[in-house]
Length: 304
Ligand code: FAQ
Image (cartoon, rainbow, N blue to C red; front, side, top):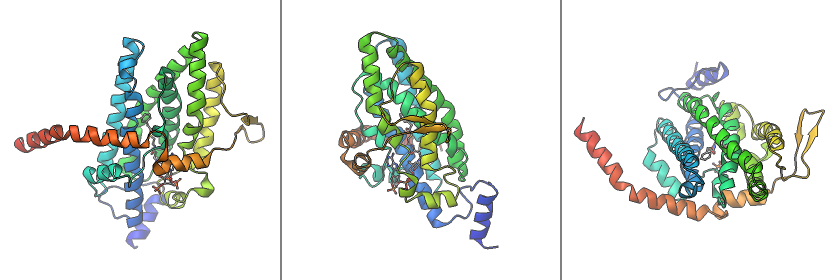
C-alpha cells in the first residue's frame, strides 16, 4: 500500500492523522493555512472586545469580559502550538499575518461602538464560532481536533455571557433595548458571513472535505447557526434584521435573505472598516512585547 493509500484509508476510517504521520503536501499546506488563520482570528478577535474593558458598566461585567478575552488568547496559543506541529514556526505564521499574507476572520474588522456590541460579539460571534468549532472537533488532524475539544468548552461560556448582556439590555430601558437592537442590526450579517462563501463558491471546500478537514460545509453550518439563533432573538424580543427570514416547514429550517458578498470580499481583502487598525495594533503590541519573549527564551535556556 502506498503512503497516499494508507493516508486515505485512515481518513476513511476516522483515524486521526498525527504530526509524524505521512501526509500529502497539499493536506499539510491546507492545515497550515486554516489553522493559522483560525489562531490569528482568536488573537485579533481580542481587540474589538479589549476596546471595552475600561468602559465595562460594572466590576462584575469587567471581570467577566477580562476572563473571556484571556480565554481567546489561550485559544490562540493552543492553535499556534497545534499549527507548529505542521513544521512551520509561530514566527513565520505571525509574519504572514502582519504582512497580510494570512487572513483572519472578517468579523473582527467591524468596530465595537457600544456596550451592547459586547453582547452581540459574545452571542453571535462566539455563537457562530461554536457551531463551526463543534464540527471541527471531528476534523482529521489530531492536534487540531483536540484543540477544538478544549476550545468549545470555553466558547459556550462566552456565548452565554454575550447573550446575558443582550438580554439585560433588551429587557432594560427603551434606550438600552434600542442599543441592543442596533448591535444586532450591525452584527447579524457579518456574523453569518463568518461561515465563508456559499458552498458553490468555496474554492477550498473540495479538498477540505476529501481530506476530512471539514466534515460539514459552510452553508450547512451557517444554516444551523441561523436556526438556533432566531429563536434566541425572539425570546429576548429582538428582531433579526432580515425581512426575508421565514420558517420553511418543508425544509424544517429558516429561509433567509441574500448576503452582501461584495462587502464580504472587500473586508476579506483588507478594505473593511478596521482592517488597518487591527493589523497596526497587532504590530505595535508585538513589538512592545519583544522584551517578554526575549526574557522567556533567556529563562528557558538558563533552566535547560
Ligand atoms: N473571513 O474556500 P473557502 C472566533 C477565506 S474564531 C476571512 O470557503 P475554507 C472566536 C478563506 O480563508 C473565528 N476569510 O475557505 C472568537 C479562503 O481564503 P484563502 C475563526 C474568509 O477555508 C470569538 C477564501 O476565503 N474561525 O471567532 C472567511 O474552506 C470572539 C475562500 O473560502 C475559524 O477560522 C471569513 N469569514 O472555509 C475570538 C474556523 N470565509 O485562505 C474572539 C476555521 C472564508 O484561500 C472573539 N476555519 N474566508 O486565501 C474554517 O472553518 C474555514 O477556514 C472557513 C472558510 C469556514 C472560515
